[in-house]
Image 1 (cartoon, one colour):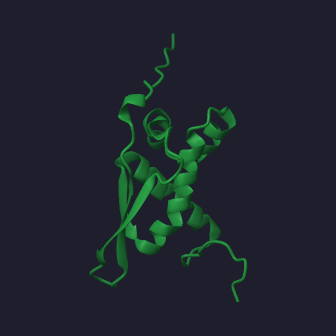
Image 2: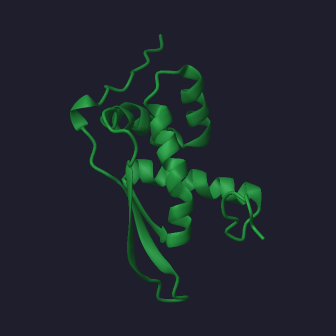
Length: 131
C-alpha cells in the first residue's frame, strides 16, 4: 500500500527526476509553455508554482536557491518578468491542458503553460559594468 508516499517516480532514479524537473521548469520559463506527457506535466506543475511563488519574495537566499535550480536565461526572465508580473496573484500561475494521444505509444500529451501576467510590472535587467 502507498499510504503517505509522496510524489511519482516516473521510472527514473532521484537524480534523473531532479534533472527532469529542472529542465521542464527552465523550458517553461523561457518559452512560456511546454508540451510533454500528462504525467510529467502534473509532476512538474507544483514544482513550477513553488519556484514562481518564491521568486516573488525579496530574499537573497531564495533567489540563490532558484538560480541553482534553473538555467541562467530562465532565472533572469523569472526574476525580472514573471515573478513581478504575478505579484498580485496568490497561486494558480500555470494551466494544464490535455492535447491528444502521442502517435507512437498512445501516451496522453498535455500542454503546461504559464497564464498571462502583468507585463507593466517587469523590472529592467541589471546591467553590470566592469572596468
